[in-house]
Length: 275
Image 1 (cartoon, one colour):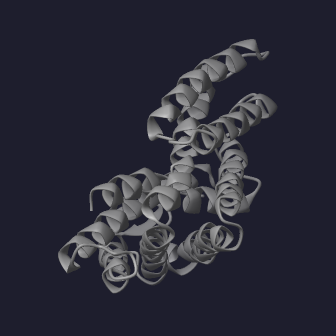
Image 2: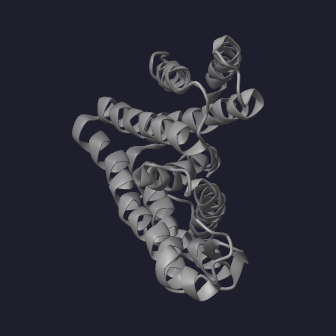
């Protein structure tokens, strides 16, 4: 994807290809996280989170071009399963258990990259694998969101994040202005409007989520919307950089959608614990 494309061309063609698939996939991902727990309880929640984790692992390795394809997939998938087990098996799970997964995952990534031959792009590939461990672990936090805060609170939080992401994509699809960076179809308007979109959902669902008053509900949704919008912006930078070499366009969309969801998981859990 050429970084020299004009702003008009971006809003007409590139923005459509960049935002429309993501705007469609966001409701699917949120429905998965909301629907399966309602149908299958904790097992459904585990299945939904694991699907997103493994999808992100595969998409991340494809999009970033990490060397050692099979080894990177193995490390990422193993980290996903380990992170989930750490938060599912104990009677009183805590996010602190993920530190063990991150530590062992880092050592596994180093070992995997050092054992492969030849060792081209060692630093970049190691960095990409280690960075992958962060959203994989953050997604596991969604397992605690419904268990420790209640399914209704989890529902409202996930809907707020989904609303913020969809609002940002749709606004930038129509009017990515003022453009935040050359070649990236993201505008300040979409970034700003994602915040009230998230706040509106938590405000309307404040009774269902048992949030303590309208100000707290608005603050909760605004924070989630802001974080989702910022991480979605970062994801767009990554996707634009990788678009030229990516042979699987669906992987770009998965990264755009799952990374913001992962970032909001621990934040939603922490805020609901104190509200």
